[in-house]
Length: 93
Image 1 (cartoon, rainbow, N blue to C red):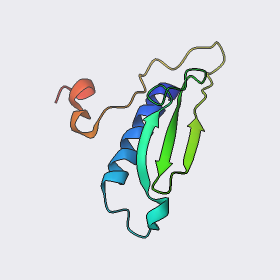
Image 2: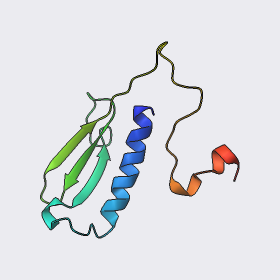
Image 3: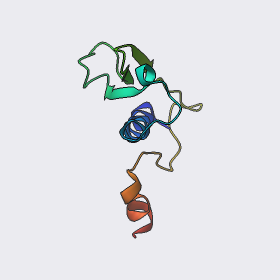
Image 4: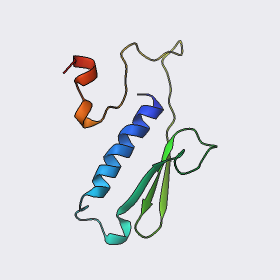
């Protein structure tokens, strides 16, 4: 999976989790905000997420990719689609 796709997928999953009640997570450790590096103004790192917790602490996760021999990704597209669109593009429904 290409780094941009995993960035979008994880941002979506963490943002949706943050909207929930986050059962069992102490208040100060709960996710307040999830931004891509670009949204957070980090221009020197290409792909990643900044996760901010309720206590103000931040976690930065940078994504890097590799490719198979020859330098190309497989022909089958690997990309993130929001849950409401899964199946629509690939399967027409």
